[in-house]
Amino acid sequence: MPAAKSLEEHVSDGTFRSRRHRGLLAGPVVRWPHLAELQARYAAATSDAERRAIGIAFEKAARELPGAHETTYDELARALHEIFAFRLSLCRSRRTIARRDAISAR
Image 1 (cartoon, one colour):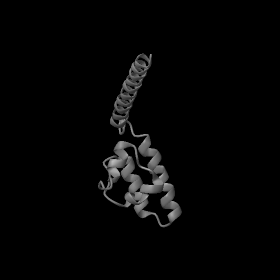
Image 2 (spheres, rainbow, N blue to C red):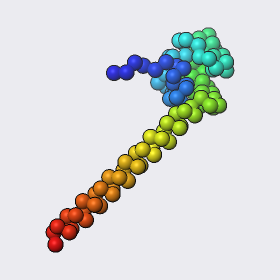
Image 3 (cartoon, rainbow, N blue to C red):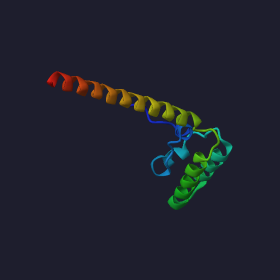
Image 4 (spheres, rainbow, N blue to C red):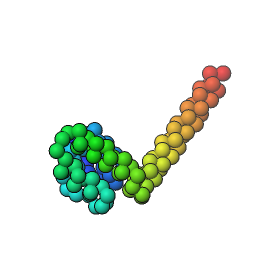
């Protein structure tokens, strides 16, 4: 099983979700000043409700970071292209097999 991602990795690849990862806010400080400020507020929070609210604010702010997840979208686009190209080649292969079967059945 792969090692758990760090907070910085979740922010960078756009996968931070407050419900699942908010506990990471108490760990090492991230490099983005606005997010680091939210982390400090999280550490100073005195109630679960306050920590939840800060976690949600952190999630929204992380999503809005300029350029933080561009690589992820590029990688996703590349992967989707490969999947569709593979699927298209499968469809072509199936048609070729069907034609051969139809010819040999005559």
